[in-house]
Image 1 (tube, rainbow, N blue to C red):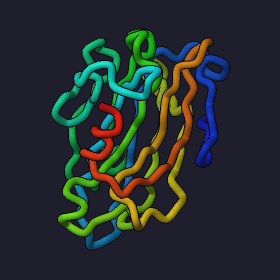
Image 2: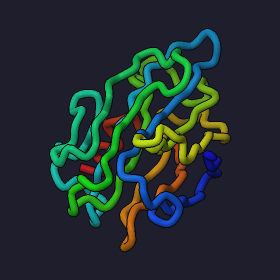
Image 3: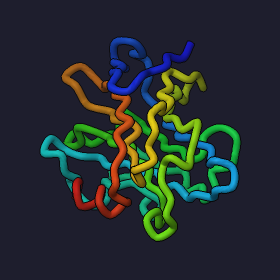
Image 4: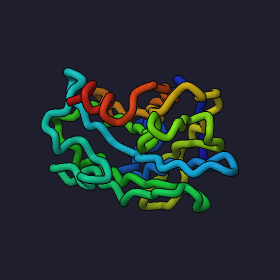
Length: 186
């Protein structure tokens, strides 16, 4: 049975899902009727210093796979109109480079400022984690807040702990487009 998280909740994968090795991270959203937004999902694989160990550890629509082979983006969905997950990231926890301490899952609206678009034009946004081997949803974090001011959103984080990985439901909005996140973590 899937666990629904709230903003700030943490889920210890090693304790609660010790057999989990391969995860599918699905992000989904529905545009408010009459609006067409192009969201881009990115993963920043950062070290203990909060920075990318190398540019290739930034996984997004122009770099679909991390250099360690642990994280793979399945491609950009430009409409977000499909049922279910709009963009998917595959993660093999055993392959993540030891220099990576955290995976940060971010969605930004393409050309948001130029198009006067923001996350308030979306509803039913969520991030979920699925065990690939069993095809079972482990957890889901539905965004509840009003994000009208924001064009970027940190949905969640996978953080390396001494004993394994912990997922944190973030739900932190930003007035920065993708370039702002790149500048923060590069």
